Length: 213
Image (cartoon, rainbow, N blue to C red; front, side, top):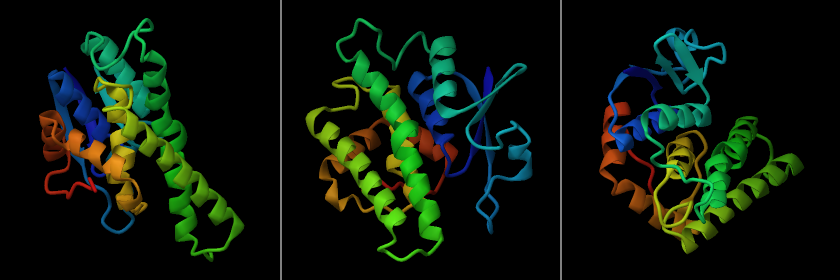
């Protein structure tokens, strides 16, 4: 058994969700953000040098980074479930969207979050450029969710787990109006209907309103 160290309202919700989908045994240790700074507490930061969520421990192993943790759990405990093999016709799509979450969408949201806190004028060139890049990222997800049931295609995969946080909980830190993205909203309704997702959110962040629209 391994331990998922879950920081409230963070990317570590992906790991709790993954474990629920795979129905594998794990220990969940929850940590609460500082009420004033909204940063991780000292005991969470002490888990790993990067000081950020997610972090898992498995025996003497301490592992961070969402994608690395997801790959590790699937390979060691998931028997290859929630991923696609190289000979699958949707393998490339799976890889693209799995890495799009933290390679494109999450960084774009993070940059806009920081720029918003600087209180720059709306016509600031950097702010306008970063907002346009964020809108483009959401446009790409919107187009994909219009043409496919899940991000990799017809099958629910770890790519959906990786993307879920950025489309939902991350909007607590960077509000983003999904009224312009009706297909993403429909996609999130499919995600929300999954029992494992509901169980994960109730275990990891009980009482937190889910930003599904």
